[in-house]
Amino acid sequence: MSQITNYIKESYTELITKVTWPTWRELQESSVLVFVASLLIAGVVFIMDWSFGVNASDSIWKGVVGNLYDLF
Image (cartoon, rainbow, N blue to C red):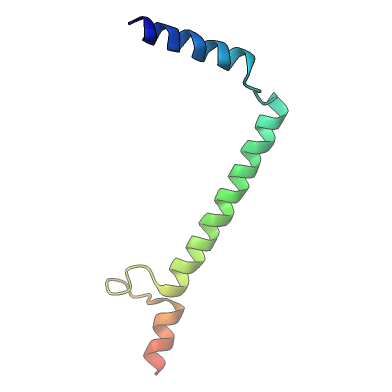
C-alpha cells in the first residue's frame, strides 16, 4: 500500500513542478486549430461520400462515380 501512496505523491509532485501547462491564449489557439482541422476533414469526407454515393444501392443518388459507371 505504501508503494501506491508513494506513486500518487510523486505523480502529483511531477504534475505540479515539472509539467509545463499552456497559457489560456495557447489553449484557445490550439482549440481553434483543432476545430478548423475537424471542419476540413469533415468536408473531405462529405465530398467523398457525395462523389461515390452514400448507400448507393438504397438511394436514388448514386454519386458522380456511380452515374459515370451507368454511362458505360
